Length: 106
Image 1 (cartoon, rainbow, N blue to C red):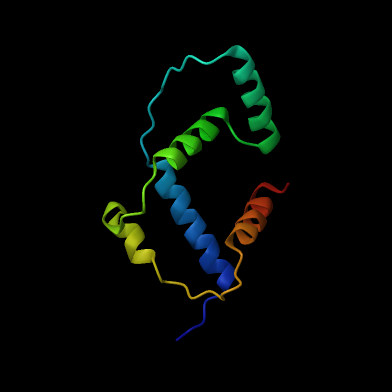
Image 2: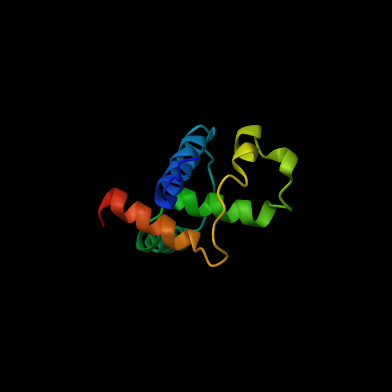
């Protein structure tokens, strides 16, 4: 059996998750928020390299999330679970950052 390089598998997983993320339906939402809060949040988002919508969405997810239910995860993603055996000290955030840096050449 041919050994597949770890970086190739990681890039394939990242591509798969990006495709899944792109398929998620989005809906516009109108909020009434103090102008100073909006201005401050926009500055924060820009400094973090994110959109204000992304920050709000992630915040709402964090306050409304419960324990992950494996039944709520799509079968396609469930099949990917356990495909790769990584070392215990594997830092996925670092690897994701490196991969995105190469992709966008920052």
